[in-house]
Length: 124
Image: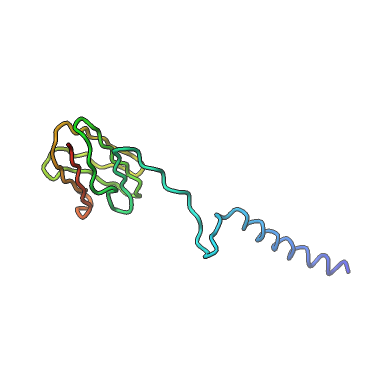
């Protein structure tokens, strides 16, 4: 009886380890996908950069308003006016840059690192 008990202790320890390690994982839905925390809500007049895209791609503000580009992506991006009005330079992951728009107009912009990323700021 002692031999069986001594042989089963390591097996019991391994089973316990697997069971307990499952307690530290993220919760899962009935479909097996892990849940993630919800994304941070964007502040007013903020363009969030994520998944190699500007969001929102079009933003309308009033003259004198500042617009912030928040880089939530894993790589650097820029916000660069198509007509040379502003250029934030590279915005590192987790960083942000702000531009004040003093005059009315429509200002298309892009990312110089990823030219397919485009957006528009409309100032009224």
